[in-house]
Length: 118
Image (cartoon, rainbow, N blue to C red):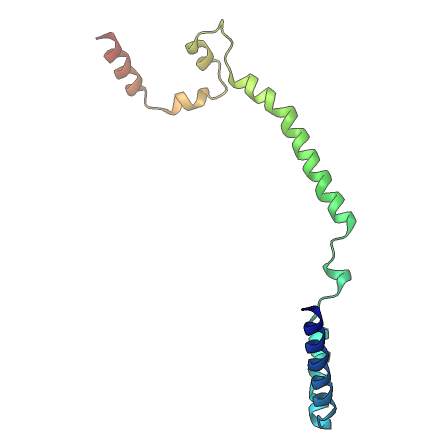
């Protein structure tokens, strides 16, 4: 099978070479111009390749972000979890978000208290 492929490849190459030799000068000039334009369209490897410096900058940024998250995550979770000896009302009253309760409609809380008393 490989011999057949080799013979076919050689015959095709010979045929293409013969037809290329038979081209007139105008066609050869046009082909050369098209080849030059195609080669100019290929991006330069130096401009498209990522520089090692950029890779290290991105890697360092990611590492710093993960370290900050690892340091802050336990503190945030600890701050959001009430201690067992504090009642929920005390915890809510001491929360930093006390302004949220001041802005709410006080009548709603009075109504809720009346409904729970019934």
